[in-house]
Length: 91
Image (cartoon, rainbow, N blue to C red):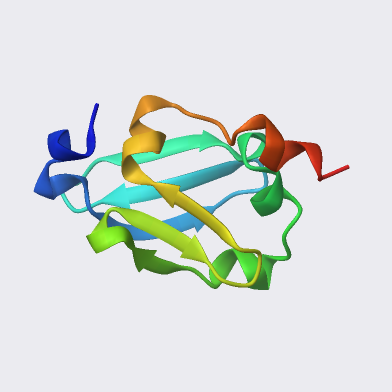
């Protein structure tokens, strides 16, 4: 999937967490749920930090300013965990 393959309905509507998962509601009604362990910065963030998110990337991304984490709906739909270098600094 390339950026040009993103469909308008794949925009971010809402973000929520459980103890073990990150879920992103899309504008088209779908919800993507992934293991929180895939994103160590989010896993180790406080509840307040997790809840402080902003829609970015023209509506197709999520940014957490407190922990400098960015995810895209494209990556979430592909099931792409954080790159190894992002995960290596978290112990």
